[in-house]
Image (cartoon, rainbow, N blue to C red; front, top):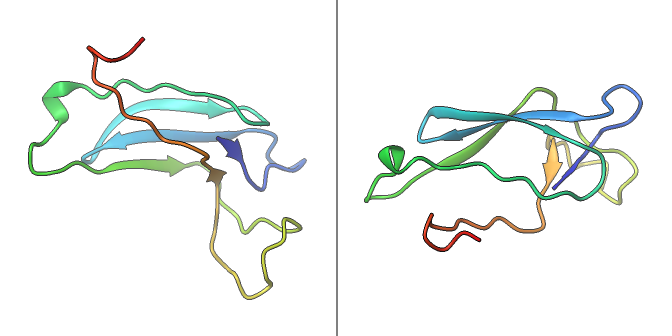
Length: 91
C-alpha cells in the first residue's frame, strides 16, 4: 500500500482496519510501498460473507498522478494486492 495525497500536509496516513463493523487495528501507513498485516479473528468471520473496510483519518483527491480533473473521488491509499490467509496457511 502507498498513501495518496501524502504531501507535506500529511506525511503518513492512518487507517483503522474494520471487519464486519468491528474495528480491529490502527495502522500507520508509511510513505512508499510497504506490506502490512492485520489479524482477522475467527470469531468475527461470518460464513455468509465478510466485509473488510479501511477507515482513513484523512482522504483527499490526489493531484498530479494522471487523474482527470473530473475525477473527484476522495482517495486515501492505493493497494497493489490484498491477501487473506488462514492461520494454518500463514507463514
